[in-house]
Length: 322
Ligand SMILES: Nc1ncnc2c1ncn2[C@@H]1O[C@H](COP(=O)(O)OP(=O)(O)O)[C@@H](O)[C@H]1O
Ligand SMILES: *[C@@H]1O[C@H](CO)[C@@H](O)[C@H](O)[C@H]1NC(C)=O
Ligand SMILES: *[C@@H]1O[C@H](CO)[C@@H](O)[C@H](O)[C@H]1NC(C)=O
Image (cartoon, rainbow, N blue to C red; front, side, top):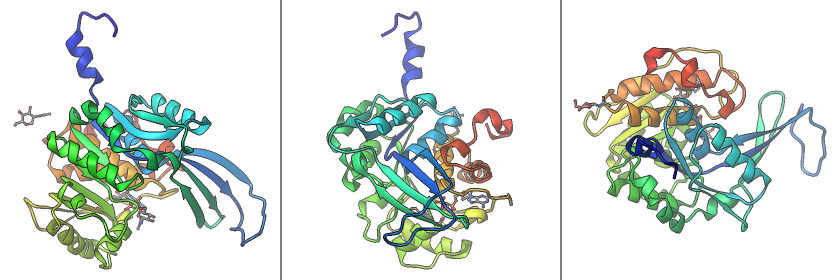
Protein backbone atom coordinates (compact mmCIF):
# COMPACT_ATOMS: atom_id res chain seq x y z
CA UNK A 1 0.00 0.00 0.00
CA UNK A 2 1.46 3.33 -0.99
CA UNK A 3 1.15 6.09 1.61
CA UNK A 4 -1.22 8.68 0.26
CA UNK A 5 -3.09 11.74 1.35
CA UNK A 6 -5.91 10.73 -0.96
CA UNK A 7 -6.90 7.24 0.05
CA UNK A 8 -10.41 7.64 -1.33
CA UNK A 9 -9.28 8.55 -4.81
CA UNK A 10 -6.71 5.75 -4.85
CA UNK A 11 -9.29 3.27 -3.85
CA UNK A 12 -11.66 4.39 -6.60
CA UNK A 13 -8.89 4.11 -9.14
CA UNK A 14 -8.24 0.51 -8.21
CA UNK A 15 -11.77 -0.70 -8.81
CA UNK A 16 -12.27 -2.21 -12.26
CA UNK A 17 -15.51 -1.12 -13.93
CA UNK A 18 -15.30 -3.89 -16.53
CA UNK A 19 -14.32 -7.39 -15.40
CA UNK A 20 -13.89 -10.25 -17.86
CA UNK A 21 -14.07 -13.84 -16.64
CA UNK A 22 -12.86 -15.68 -19.70
CA UNK A 23 -10.18 -16.98 -21.99
CA UNK A 24 -6.78 -16.05 -23.33
CA UNK A 25 -5.08 -17.87 -26.17
CA UNK A 26 -1.79 -17.49 -27.95
CA UNK A 27 -2.34 -17.45 -31.72
CA UNK A 28 0.42 -19.22 -33.68
CA UNK A 29 -0.17 -18.15 -37.24
CA UNK A 30 1.47 -19.52 -40.41
CA UNK A 31 0.75 -17.98 -43.79
CA UNK A 32 1.02 -20.41 -46.71
CA UNK A 33 0.09 -20.38 -50.40
CA UNK A 34 -2.26 -23.33 -49.81
CA UNK A 35 -3.42 -25.53 -46.93
CA UNK A 36 -1.46 -28.80 -46.40
CA UNK A 37 -3.06 -32.19 -47.06
CA UNK A 38 -2.98 -35.02 -44.49
CA UNK A 39 0.60 -36.16 -43.88
CA UNK A 40 2.03 -33.39 -46.02
CA UNK A 41 4.73 -30.91 -45.01
CA UNK A 42 4.70 -27.60 -46.83
CA UNK A 43 6.65 -24.36 -46.47
CA UNK A 44 4.85 -21.21 -45.44
CA UNK A 45 6.07 -17.69 -46.16
CA UNK A 46 5.38 -16.00 -42.85
CA UNK A 47 4.93 -16.86 -39.16
CA UNK A 48 3.78 -14.67 -36.31
CA UNK A 49 2.50 -14.96 -32.76
CA UNK A 50 -0.54 -12.97 -31.71
CA UNK A 51 -2.56 -12.44 -28.56
CA UNK A 52 -6.08 -13.83 -28.84
CA UNK A 53 -8.87 -15.60 -27.00
CA UNK A 54 -12.30 -14.04 -26.88
CA UNK A 55 -12.18 -13.00 -23.23
CA UNK A 56 -8.83 -11.28 -23.51
CA UNK A 57 -9.75 -9.61 -26.81
CA UNK A 58 -12.90 -8.10 -25.31
CA UNK A 59 -10.99 -6.93 -22.25
CA UNK A 60 -8.29 -5.31 -24.39
CA UNK A 61 -10.85 -3.41 -26.48
CA UNK A 62 -12.61 -2.09 -23.37
CA UNK A 63 -9.22 -1.07 -21.91
CA UNK A 64 -8.14 0.68 -25.13
CA UNK A 65 -11.29 2.80 -24.88
CA UNK A 66 -10.26 3.86 -21.39
CA UNK A 67 -12.12 1.40 -19.18
CA UNK A 68 -10.58 0.28 -15.89
CA UNK A 69 -10.49 -3.46 -16.45
CA UNK A 70 -9.55 -6.67 -14.70
CA UNK A 71 -8.96 -10.03 -16.38
CA UNK A 72 -9.97 -13.11 -14.39
CA UNK A 73 -8.43 -16.02 -16.28
CA UNK A 74 -5.83 -18.78 -16.16
CA UNK A 75 -2.66 -19.23 -18.20
CA UNK A 76 0.13 -21.78 -17.96
CA UNK A 77 3.37 -21.30 -16.02
CA UNK A 78 5.19 -21.08 -19.34
CA UNK A 79 6.63 -18.46 -21.63
CA UNK A 80 3.34 -17.89 -23.46
CA UNK A 81 1.64 -17.33 -20.12
CA UNK A 82 4.33 -14.88 -19.00
CA UNK A 83 4.06 -13.02 -22.31
CA UNK A 84 0.29 -12.84 -22.04
CA UNK A 85 0.46 -11.33 -18.55
CA UNK A 86 2.92 -8.75 -19.91
CA UNK A 87 0.46 -8.00 -22.75
CA UNK A 88 -2.33 -7.36 -20.22
CA UNK A 89 -0.05 -5.02 -18.26
CA UNK A 90 0.92 -3.15 -21.44
CA UNK A 91 -2.78 -2.54 -22.00
CA UNK A 92 -3.30 -1.31 -18.45
CA UNK A 93 -5.41 -4.34 -17.50
CA UNK A 94 -5.27 -5.58 -13.89
CA UNK A 95 -3.74 -9.06 -13.68
CA UNK A 96 -4.40 -9.46 -9.98
CA UNK A 97 -6.64 -12.43 -10.79
CA UNK A 98 -4.82 -13.73 -13.84
CA UNK A 99 -3.77 -17.10 -12.46
CA UNK A 100 -0.84 -19.23 -13.63
CA UNK A 101 -0.91 -23.02 -13.37
CA UNK A 102 1.73 -25.71 -13.75
CA UNK A 103 -0.96 -28.26 -14.65
CA UNK A 104 -1.65 -27.16 -18.23
CA UNK A 105 -0.18 -25.05 -20.99
CA UNK A 106 -1.42 -21.59 -21.90
CA UNK A 107 -4.32 -21.86 -24.35
CA UNK A 108 -3.08 -21.94 -27.92
CA UNK A 109 -4.62 -21.64 -31.38
CA UNK A 110 -2.53 -23.05 -34.23
CA UNK A 111 -3.75 -21.28 -37.35
CA UNK A 112 -2.83 -21.82 -40.99
CA UNK A 113 -4.09 -19.25 -43.49
CA UNK A 114 -3.74 -19.58 -47.26
CA UNK A 115 -3.52 -16.81 -49.86
CA UNK A 116 -7.29 -16.85 -50.35
CA UNK A 117 -7.78 -16.16 -46.64
CA UNK A 118 -9.14 -19.67 -45.97
CA UNK A 119 -7.88 -21.19 -42.74
CA UNK A 120 -7.62 -24.29 -40.63
CA UNK A 121 -7.42 -23.84 -36.86
CA UNK A 122 -6.71 -26.14 -33.92
CA UNK A 123 -7.47 -24.73 -30.48
CA UNK A 124 -6.11 -26.31 -27.30
CA UNK A 125 -7.84 -24.47 -24.47
CA UNK A 126 -5.36 -25.86 -21.89
CA UNK A 127 -5.13 -23.69 -18.76
CA UNK A 128 -8.37 -21.88 -19.67
CA UNK A 129 -10.32 -25.00 -18.71
CA UNK A 130 -8.71 -25.05 -15.25
CA UNK A 131 -10.18 -21.70 -14.17
CA UNK A 132 -12.56 -22.86 -11.44
CA UNK A 133 -15.04 -21.65 -8.86
CA UNK A 134 -12.32 -21.50 -6.17
CA UNK A 135 -10.50 -18.97 -8.33
CA UNK A 136 -13.72 -16.97 -8.66
CA UNK A 137 -14.15 -16.91 -4.89
CA UNK A 138 -10.71 -15.32 -4.58
CA UNK A 139 -11.74 -12.73 -7.17
CA UNK A 140 -15.14 -12.11 -5.55
CA UNK A 141 -14.38 -8.55 -4.46
CA UNK A 142 -13.34 -7.42 -7.95
CA UNK A 143 -16.36 -9.12 -9.55
CA UNK A 144 -18.84 -7.73 -7.05
CA UNK A 145 -17.54 -4.14 -7.37
CA UNK A 146 -17.62 -4.05 -11.19
CA UNK A 147 -20.20 -2.21 -13.24
CA UNK A 148 -20.20 -4.84 -15.99
CA UNK A 149 -18.94 -8.41 -16.14
CA UNK A 150 -18.40 -10.22 -19.45
CA UNK A 151 -18.33 -14.00 -20.02
CA UNK A 152 -17.96 -16.21 -23.08
CA UNK A 153 -17.80 -19.98 -23.61
CA UNK A 154 -14.07 -20.62 -24.03
CA UNK A 155 -13.70 -21.64 -20.38
CA UNK A 156 -15.51 -24.40 -18.44
CA UNK A 157 -19.27 -23.58 -18.68
CA UNK A 158 -19.79 -24.22 -14.93
CA UNK A 159 -17.19 -21.53 -14.17
CA UNK A 160 -18.92 -19.03 -16.49
CA UNK A 161 -22.28 -19.82 -14.87
CA UNK A 162 -20.86 -19.29 -11.40
CA UNK A 163 -19.32 -15.96 -12.46
CA UNK A 164 -22.64 -14.80 -13.94
CA UNK A 165 -24.45 -15.85 -10.77
CA UNK A 166 -21.97 -13.93 -8.60
CA UNK A 167 -22.30 -10.82 -10.75
CA UNK A 168 -26.09 -10.97 -10.83
CA UNK A 169 -26.39 -11.38 -7.06
CA UNK A 170 -24.23 -8.26 -6.58
CA UNK A 171 -26.17 -6.08 -9.01
CA UNK A 172 -23.35 -6.16 -11.58
CA UNK A 173 -24.64 -6.01 -15.17
CA UNK A 174 -23.92 -9.24 -17.03
CA UNK A 175 -22.89 -9.25 -20.70
CA UNK A 176 -22.82 -12.79 -22.05
CA UNK A 177 -21.32 -13.72 -25.42
CA UNK A 178 -22.17 -17.40 -26.11
CA UNK A 179 -19.10 -18.01 -28.24
CA UNK A 180 -18.25 -20.54 -29.49
CA UNK A 181 -21.88 -21.65 -29.37
CA UNK A 182 -23.02 -25.12 -28.34
CA UNK A 183 -26.49 -26.38 -29.33
CA UNK A 184 -27.48 -27.55 -25.84
CA UNK A 185 -26.53 -24.46 -23.85
CA UNK A 186 -27.57 -24.62 -20.18
CA UNK A 187 -30.82 -22.59 -19.96
CA UNK A 188 -29.47 -20.69 -16.93
CA UNK A 189 -27.18 -18.76 -19.28
CA UNK A 190 -30.23 -17.02 -20.74
CA UNK A 191 -31.82 -16.08 -17.43
CA UNK A 192 -28.46 -14.80 -16.12
CA UNK A 193 -27.86 -12.53 -19.16
CA UNK A 194 -28.70 -8.85 -18.77
CA UNK A 195 -27.30 -8.52 -22.28
CA UNK A 196 -26.93 -11.54 -24.55
CA UNK A 197 -24.80 -10.83 -27.63
CA UNK A 198 -23.95 -13.31 -30.39
CA UNK A 199 -23.29 -13.42 -34.14
CA UNK A 200 -25.37 -14.96 -36.93
CA UNK A 201 -23.89 -18.46 -36.90
CA UNK A 202 -24.06 -18.65 -33.11
CA UNK A 203 -27.73 -17.58 -33.25
CA UNK A 204 -28.34 -20.38 -35.78
CA UNK A 205 -26.64 -23.00 -33.60
CA UNK A 206 -28.56 -21.92 -30.51
CA UNK A 207 -32.01 -21.62 -32.12
CA UNK A 208 -31.92 -24.00 -35.09
CA UNK A 209 -33.25 -21.13 -37.24
CA UNK A 210 -31.55 -19.68 -40.32
CA UNK A 211 -30.06 -16.26 -39.53
CA UNK A 212 -28.85 -14.42 -42.58
CA UNK A 213 -30.45 -10.98 -42.47
CA UNK A 214 -31.89 -8.46 -39.99
CA UNK A 215 -35.40 -9.90 -40.20
CA UNK A 216 -34.27 -13.45 -39.43
CA UNK A 217 -32.02 -12.09 -36.66
CA UNK A 218 -35.09 -10.42 -35.15
CA UNK A 219 -36.86 -13.79 -35.05
CA UNK A 220 -33.89 -15.52 -33.42
CA UNK A 221 -33.64 -12.67 -30.90
CA UNK A 222 -37.31 -13.22 -30.01
CA UNK A 223 -36.44 -16.84 -29.14
CA UNK A 224 -33.58 -15.72 -26.86
CA UNK A 225 -35.83 -13.16 -25.18
CA UNK A 226 -38.39 -15.89 -24.47
CA UNK A 227 -35.59 -17.95 -22.88
CA UNK A 228 -35.07 -15.20 -20.30
CA UNK A 229 -32.49 -12.69 -21.60
CA UNK A 230 -33.27 -9.06 -20.76
CA UNK A 231 -31.59 -7.64 -23.85
CA UNK A 232 -30.57 -9.51 -27.01
CA UNK A 233 -28.11 -8.28 -29.64
CA UNK A 234 -27.26 -10.24 -32.77
CA UNK A 235 -24.32 -8.92 -34.79
CA UNK A 236 -24.56 -9.11 -38.58
CA UNK A 237 -21.06 -8.34 -39.89
CA UNK A 238 -21.20 -5.45 -42.37
CA UNK A 239 -24.94 -5.16 -41.76
CA UNK A 240 -24.42 -3.96 -38.17
CA UNK A 241 -26.65 -5.54 -35.55
CA UNK A 242 -30.19 -6.17 -34.36
CA UNK A 243 -31.45 -5.22 -30.89
CA UNK A 244 -34.39 -6.60 -28.96
CA UNK A 245 -35.22 -6.01 -25.30
CA UNK A 246 -37.86 -6.91 -22.76
CA UNK A 247 -38.73 -3.23 -22.43
CA UNK A 248 -38.99 -2.76 -26.24
CA UNK A 249 -39.86 -6.17 -27.66
CA UNK A 250 -39.82 -5.10 -31.33
CA UNK A 251 -36.58 -5.94 -33.19
CA UNK A 252 -34.59 -2.88 -34.20
CA UNK A 253 -31.94 -3.03 -36.93
CA UNK A 254 -28.94 -0.78 -36.32
CA UNK A 255 -26.98 -0.65 -39.59
CA UNK A 256 -23.33 0.34 -39.87
CA UNK A 257 -21.37 2.24 -42.48
CA UNK A 258 -19.63 0.57 -45.42
CA UNK A 259 -15.91 0.21 -44.95
CA UNK A 260 -13.16 -1.66 -46.78
CA UNK A 261 -12.63 -4.77 -44.65
CA UNK A 262 -9.03 -6.02 -44.46
CA UNK A 263 -9.26 -8.55 -41.61
CA UNK A 264 -12.53 -9.22 -39.78
CA UNK A 265 -10.93 -11.54 -37.18
CA UNK A 266 -12.05 -10.48 -33.72
CA UNK A 267 -14.62 -7.91 -34.92
CA UNK A 268 -17.24 -9.44 -32.65
CA UNK A 269 -14.86 -9.15 -29.68
CA UNK A 270 -14.15 -5.50 -30.47
CA UNK A 271 -17.91 -4.93 -30.56
CA UNK A 272 -18.53 -6.70 -27.22
CA UNK A 273 -15.61 -4.90 -25.54
CA UNK A 274 -16.87 -1.54 -26.77
CA UNK A 275 -20.40 -2.31 -25.62
CA UNK A 276 -19.12 -3.20 -22.13
CA UNK A 277 -17.24 0.11 -22.03
CA UNK A 278 -20.42 2.06 -22.83
CA UNK A 279 -22.55 0.07 -20.39
CA UNK A 280 -20.02 0.78 -17.63
CA UNK A 281 -19.15 4.43 -18.34
CA UNK A 282 -22.21 5.81 -20.19
CA UNK A 283 -25.09 3.91 -18.58
CA UNK A 284 -27.51 6.69 -19.44
CA UNK A 285 -27.02 6.39 -23.20
CA UNK A 286 -29.83 4.55 -24.97
CA UNK A 287 -28.92 0.98 -25.95
CA UNK A 288 -29.41 1.99 -29.54
CA UNK A 289 -26.81 4.72 -29.25
CA UNK A 290 -24.39 2.36 -27.46
CA UNK A 291 -24.77 -0.08 -30.36
CA UNK A 292 -24.28 2.60 -33.01
CA UNK A 293 -21.01 3.53 -31.32
CA UNK A 294 -19.97 -0.12 -30.88
CA UNK A 295 -20.67 -0.73 -34.59
CA UNK A 296 -18.43 2.21 -35.42
CA UNK A 297 -15.58 0.95 -33.24
CA UNK A 298 -15.81 -2.63 -34.55
CA UNK A 299 -15.83 -1.27 -38.13
CA UNK A 300 -12.48 0.37 -37.44
CA UNK A 301 -11.09 -2.95 -36.18
CA UNK A 302 -11.85 -4.69 -39.51
CA UNK A 303 -9.86 -2.11 -41.47
CA UNK A 304 -6.47 -3.25 -40.13
CA UNK A 305 -4.76 -6.64 -39.95
CA UNK A 306 -4.47 -8.46 -36.63
CA UNK A 307 -6.87 -8.93 -33.76
CA UNK A 308 -6.05 -6.93 -30.60
CA UNK A 309 -3.57 -4.83 -32.59
CA UNK A 310 -6.42 -3.67 -34.87
CA UNK A 311 -8.55 -2.37 -31.99
CA UNK A 312 -8.68 1.43 -31.79
CA UNK A 313 -7.61 3.51 -28.79
CA UNK A 314 -9.78 6.28 -27.41
CA UNK A 315 -7.21 8.86 -28.55
CA UNK A 316 -7.63 7.78 -32.19
CA UNK A 317 -11.43 8.04 -32.18
CA UNK A 318 -13.76 11.02 -32.73
CA UNK A 319 -14.45 12.82 -29.42
CA UNK A 320 -18.18 12.59 -30.16
CA UNK A 321 -17.97 8.90 -29.17
CA UNK A 322 -17.09 9.87 -25.59
N1 LIG B 1 -17.21 -5.79 -42.99
C1 LIG B 1 -17.60 -5.04 -41.96
N2 LIG B 1 -17.85 -3.72 -42.10
C2 LIG B 1 -18.24 -2.96 -41.06
N3 LIG B 1 -18.43 -3.45 -39.83
C3 LIG B 1 -18.19 -4.74 -39.61
C4 LIG B 1 -17.78 -5.62 -40.66
N4 LIG B 1 -17.63 -6.86 -40.13
C5 LIG B 1 -17.94 -6.76 -38.83
N5 LIG B 1 -18.29 -5.50 -38.50
C6 LIG B 1 -18.68 -5.00 -37.16
O1 LIG B 1 -18.33 -5.97 -36.21
C7 LIG B 1 -19.49 -6.49 -35.56
C8 LIG B 1 -19.29 -7.97 -35.32
O2 LIG B 1 -19.06 -8.62 -36.55
P1 LIG B 1 -19.59 -10.09 -36.84
O3 LIG B 1 -19.00 -10.52 -38.12
O4 LIG B 1 -21.08 -10.10 -36.75
O5 LIG B 1 -19.04 -10.90 -35.59
P2 LIG B 1 -17.88 -12.03 -35.47
O6 LIG B 1 -16.58 -11.32 -35.41
O7 LIG B 1 -18.24 -12.72 -34.20
O8 LIG B 1 -18.00 -12.90 -36.65
C9 LIG B 1 -20.66 -6.15 -36.47
O9 LIG B 1 -21.85 -6.01 -35.73
C10 LIG B 1 -20.19 -4.81 -37.05
O10 LIG B 1 -20.45 -3.78 -36.13
C1 LIG C 1 -19.37 -16.25 -35.30
O1 LIG C 1 -18.42 -16.54 -34.29
C2 LIG C 1 -17.85 -17.83 -34.41
C3 LIG C 1 -17.02 -18.07 -33.17
O2 LIG C 1 -17.89 -18.36 -32.12
C4 LIG C 1 -17.05 -17.92 -35.69
O3 LIG C 1 -16.48 -19.20 -35.85
C5 LIG C 1 -17.99 -17.64 -36.86
O4 LIG C 1 -17.26 -17.60 -38.06
C6 LIG C 1 -18.73 -16.32 -36.67
N1 LIG C 1 -19.80 -16.23 -37.66
C7 LIG C 1 -20.02 -15.17 -38.42
C8 LIG C 1 -21.17 -15.24 -39.35
O5 LIG C 1 -19.31 -14.17 -38.37
C1 LIG D 1 -27.49 9.03 -15.21
O1 LIG D 1 -28.75 9.58 -14.91
C2 LIG D 1 -29.05 9.61 -13.54
C3 LIG D 1 -30.52 9.99 -13.33
O2 LIG D 1 -30.92 10.91 -14.31
C4 LIG D 1 -28.07 10.56 -12.85
O3 LIG D 1 -28.33 10.63 -11.47
C5 LIG D 1 -26.65 10.06 -13.09
O4 LIG D 1 -25.70 10.96 -12.56
C6 LIG D 1 -26.36 9.85 -14.56
N1 LIG D 1 -25.11 9.11 -14.68
C7 LIG D 1 -24.15 9.47 -15.54
C8 LIG D 1 -22.92 8.62 -15.54
O5 LIG D 1 -24.23 10.39 -16.30
